[in-house]
Length: 117
Image (cartoon, rainbow, N blue to C red; front, side):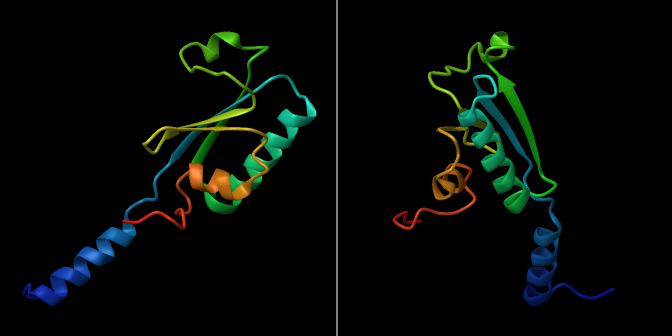
């Protein structure tokens, strides 16, 4: 067994951190029927998720005309609306998801260039 020293403790910690599973995204896309705008939102969002979140997202597409009860408590004021439930913080994105940069920013997949940490 190797004795612990600051160097191998750090290496062990870094290996453990890399082995952690990536965060799982829980997304709900609210649409109004299969209009062209709704279909575009679904297509655009699936493309983004497949590219950036492959294997670690759950996307529910909810037609608010067919399942109005599922919108209760969600404060849907326009459609399409994407709600990122997890990981926190929860976010809302309204539109057809064609503004890729805005969607990536809303999903916290890229950082805002003017954001200081």
